[in-house]
Length: 315
Ligand code: HEC
Ligand code: HEC
Image (cartoon, rainbow, N blue to C red; front, side, top):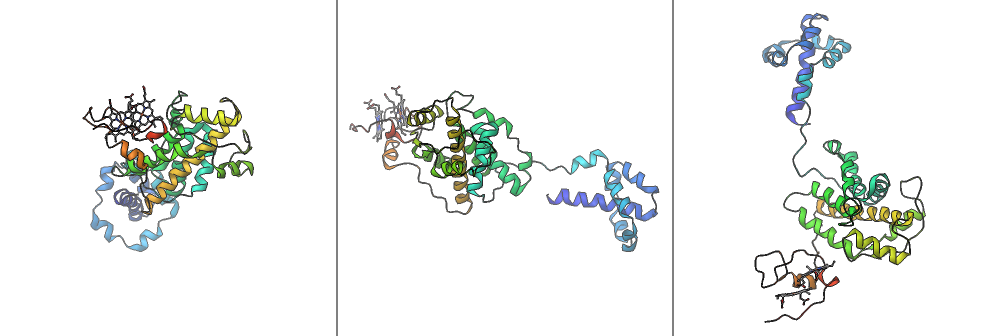
């Protein structure tokens, strides 16, 4: 609550008790309650000071409450807080709790929602406002690489959106990049998530599967590739309960990693290590730029050698 709204609210309460104090009866209660806000504001300061403390004390509590209850709607609206500008505040979160929460979120409304909701709802619990004002249902859009088209993995979409919400405009990109580059080389589901499922340590009541799964490395951030590689590695069909559970565990793993990075960022231990030496070299020429001839007809910073072979450099 900022200074203004706080003092305004206090002022209203004081004004109410004052008004009743003067007349020492219920007579003025109604008047104060219906008074337009200009009148309330105009109670002169000197008058406020002059009211003896004992009188204020003697106003019965019920009367004060009644006055506050009956504050006209226009005045109540004034104390509603404005949602702050980006970025929103962050406090360190429990990585394992977020892993479990995101898995639960996946069961509620898919990968993208699950990762986003796990972070936002954890901050809602820890900080309250403004996270109480953040809608999360719409984050279902990222399911299966946006509307099941197999584009960017939804867990990444949700997690990077939540990360960006709490990172400032100067730093969001470098921290988000770290997650984006961690994903393609990471085996999913993680051993931790496999173990949680086996021991029923996740937050869901009924598991689609509590088996320990084979893990696979996607070497891509795309849903299509990530899911397909895992299906081929595990022998489960893409529409199976097992594949769905695998994506639930992955959603937990991605949200947990996002929060790990945010925690590092918050305590200033974050270090950017995104590109491998090979990729760093490729992007000296192949990068977003204006010189077509030197190779600037591409963009992106994913690990190049996953898909391409290095080539000789013509002089
Ligand atoms: C010194 C600048 C430079 C660097 C470094 C460089 N490239 Fe290139 N690359 C080029 C240019 C220029 C072309 C176009 C060559 C041509 O058309 O003959 C090219 C062409 C390519 C092509 C298309 C032609 C082919 O050979 O298949 C691919 C793919 C490619 N580069 C990938 C990479 C990767 C991956 C790396 C890093 C391992 C890399 N490049 C590093 C300048 C560079
Ligand atoms: C997930 C796989 C993947 C990754 C990672 C990737 N690329 Fe590509 N790249 C492709 C595909 C697919 C094409 C389109 C090839 C085509 O149409 O022939 C392409 C095209 C290109 C081309 C033009 C090829 C040509 O024939 O002229 C260049 C150059 C290139 N990529 C460089 C890079 C560099 C540099 C990186 C790393 C920063 C990178 N790519 C990362 C898959 C990838």
